[in-house]
Length: 249
Ligand code: AMP
Picture 1 (cartoon, rainbow, N blue to C red):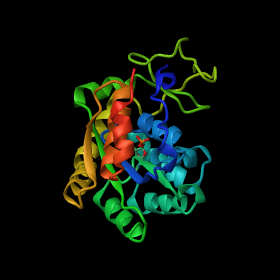
Picture 2: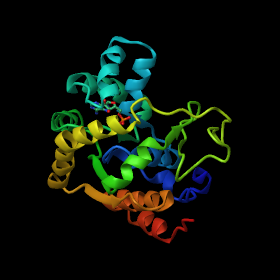
Picture 3: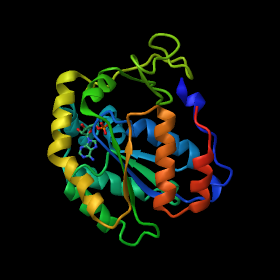
Picture 4: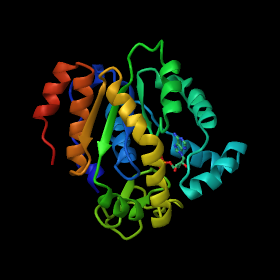
């Protein structure tokens, strides 16, 4: 599995403070996979609103039960509920040096709320939009398999585990998300086009800490491009030079 062939940590990455990083993009562009790589590299948490909602769903909380039906249809959960959930998560101490927001914000209202929420933060938000042609996304979504123990993401077509349906790391039986089906994919793309595309434009036109990366490359190449973008947007020249010379297999 290619998690094993990830680029090695940079020697000076321990002094680089990533701050709040947003990974934006349509369903299946690789936000979750890339967020996990940044987590390993910088020891900051991944805050995936989809994962948090799935956790609520599993625990049958009020929010989880409300979200369940919307998620099954590929529709967005109301802003106020998601914002509140993110606000609670951001109070936890592990977010001090930064975090990767994966799947949030998804509406303009959420983006504006986040701006207000982070108005006093030391480092401004950096938004990185991962772009993949739509025709490729369907296969990525319907082929996605996830380890329920370690969260490693596989794809039965392009990144299969060594043993069919079994996690290379944990030996656990891989699972498929309930909303990773073709009909729900189209609904999720609809939500992306009608609500989230405007969020990408919002960050593109506000303040300059925005960049697009090509997500239709190997996982390692996308990781390298995200790292280079992050260092560039944070003006971390030393780190940027190291990642440019780093070998990616
Ligand atoms: P994801 O795991 O990011 O693909 O999200 C799965 C589902 O959770 C989405 O299709 C939505 O139903 C819901 N969801 C996740 N994040 C958000 C958000 N920021 N705003 C509204 N709904 C969300």
